Image (cartoon, rainbow, N blue to C red):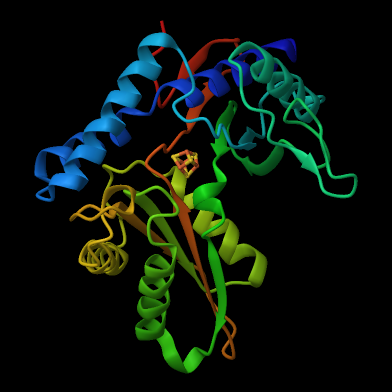
Length: 292
Ligand code: SF4
C-alpha cells in the first residue's frame, strides 16, 4: 500500500468536512428549527439550514472561516503503512486549501506572517492514538475560532465539586453569549491534568449528537447542563430563542485529591468533521458521510 492513499483520503475528508455537515448535525439543526418558538431564533435557524443546503449543492465551504486544520489519527498496530503519515496530511492540507478552496488561516506568530496554505509549525496539528487493530482511522477537524476563542479551562478548587463545575459551565456559556455562533455543541471534561482536560473536552466535540452517553451519571449531567444552557435564552446566533446548544457531551478522568481541572470547549453550528477508515487491502470506508 502506498502512502498516497492517506493523502488522497485526507484531502477528500477536508473537502467533505468543509462543504457537507454530518447527518447527525443536520438532523439536530432541523429539529431545532422545527421546535424553535422565538421568531428571531427561527429565522436564524432557517438561514443556517439554507446556508448548509447551498454549500452542499455548490460544493462550497459552509462558512467563510474554514478554520485551522487538525487531524485525529487512530493508527492500528497492524496497519501496514506508518512512515510518512504526517507529511501526507500536510500535503493533503495544502491540496485542499487550493482545490476547495479553504481560507489560509495559519499565521506564524513569530514572524506575524500568514503561511498561505494552512500549514506550518505544528499545523495541521495531529492527535495520535494507537489501538489494537489493522486499519487507520482519520478524522479531519477544521476548527473555526469564533467558537475556539470562547473555550475555557479552570483549575477549580476541589471543594467545589460538581456544583462548582455546573456553575463554571453556565458562566462560561453566558460569557460566550452569541460569539461562538450558537446553537453550539459543548464539550465538558473534568479531572486529569491541565493539558489532558482540554484535550478531552475538545475531543468530545467529535462525538455524534444522536448517541447517548453510555455512563448513566454522565448522561444525566449532560441533560441537566443542556437544560440550563438552553434556559439562558441566548438562542440561535445569540439573537434569542430556546436553542442555545444542540448537545452537551461530558467526560472525566480521575483527579489528584488537591485538584479539580475543568475544561469547556465550544463547537459552533457549523460542526464540521469527517472520518474515514483505510483498511490494509486499500479499501476505504467513510464513517460520517455518504460517498460514492
Ligand atoms: S464560529 Fe463557526 S459559524 Fe461562526 S464564523 Fe466561526 S466557523 Fe463560522
